[in-house]
Image (tube, rainbow, N blue to C red; front, side, top):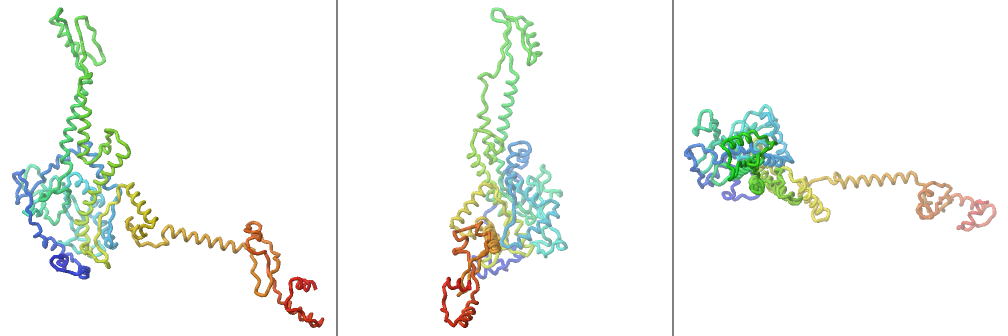
Length: 543
C-alpha cells in the first residue's frame, strides 16, 4: 500500500522515493486505521449524569440553551457575538495553493455545492463561525449525491459510493456523541426531545464518517469544546440584578416617602385626625401640596446624602462582563474611565489578535475536513509533500488581513527594505504574499521607462524634421557660406554660433576647378601651382 511510504519510522525512504509517492483515495481511510494504536489514553467520562457511559450517547456538559437565551436577551452578549462575526468575515477569504488547477477545481466544486445546497457557500461558512463563536462546537453532516452527469471531470469518492454535494448543520444544543473508550466518536445523535435521554425513532443518528465536528478549546479526553461564553453568564446575571436594584432605587427616589407628624407631646392627636391625614395623602397629587395647621408637621424623606452610590459597583460588573466576553468596554459602546486614541488602538489590536487566532483554527479545520476530501475526489493528492521540483496539490483556506492599518505598515516596511537594497524584488514580493514571477515591463517602472524612451524618440524625430543643419563637406572640399537662414538659430540658440560648434556654413563642389586650370594653362602657356589659397580662388571665380 502506497500510504505506508509516508510512515518514516517504518520505512527509510529517500527523498527521491518520497517525491514519487502518490496517495490513492482508497488509502486515505487507511491512515486512521494505521495510527489507531496511538490512541492509548482512555477518554473522559463525566459522572454528573446518571445516563452517561460507554454505551450511551453523551450530552454536552455545557448548557448551550442558556447561552442561546443570553445571546437572545442580553444586549452586551448579542453585540459582542456580532462584533466577533463582523470582524471574522470583515475582509473576505480566498483559496490559495501552489497548484492553480487544484484551486480552480475547489472553486468549481463550491459552485456546484451552492446549487445543491440552494444557499451561498459563504452563508454556510458564516453559520459555521456563528456556532463556533457561541458554543465552540459545530456539527456539519455531509450530503452525498451523483454528480457524474453534471460535473465536467470524473470524481472518485473517498470511503463512499457518491461524492459530497453539500453540507448541512445540526443544532449544536441537540447533539450527543457516542464514543469508544479511546475517545474516538462512533456516531452522532440529534436529540429532538430534551425530556428523554433514550434514543427514539425520530432522533436521527449519523455514523462518525458522515459528520464533521469542528471545535475550539476542547480539553483532552472530552468530546465537546469549551465555550468561552459559559464563564461570563453568571457575571451577566449579577450585572442585571445590579441594574434592577438601581432601577428600584430610582423608582423609590422618584416618588418620595412622606413623614407626617400629627400633634405634639403637649397636644396629642385627636382620634379622627390620623385617618383624615391618611386619606389626604392617598389623594395627594405629585405636583400638589399640603395646607396644614400648626399641630401638623409633614417631612419629605428623600435621598439627600444618605442613599448608597451604586455607580462604582455598576462599573465593576460592566468591566467583568466586557472582560468575560473578550472585548473592551468601548467595543460595546461604553465610555467608562475615559481613555485616549492610543489606548483604544491597543485594545483594538488585542481584539484583532483574538479574532485571528479563531480564524487560524477555523482555516485549518476547513482545510483538513473539507478541502482535503474534495481534492481526493477530484484526483488530487493534498498529502503529497513534493521536494524541490514538483508542486503541491494542498490548498489552504486563507482569510484576508482584517487589521488594514497594520497591513499597510507591514507592506510599507517591506517596500522600504527593497528600496534600501536590503532584499531583492523576489523576496519582497514573497513577503507581500504575491507571485514572485513578474514581467519587468509590466511594472510601473518598466512602463515609465518605455514612455520616457518613446518621448525621447519623438522629440529627436521632431528636431530632425525642423533642423536647418547642413551636411559637412566631403574630404578635399571647402565649406561655403550658407544662404539658408532657418528659424532654429534665432529661436533656440545655444552658443554664439547658434546650435552648432562652428559657423553656419555650407560646402560646394569644386571639381570644376581642375578643368578651368587646364584651360588657362593651354591659353596662357603657364604652369599653375597645384595648391591655391582662398584669395586666388576668389580671383579665379571673378574671372
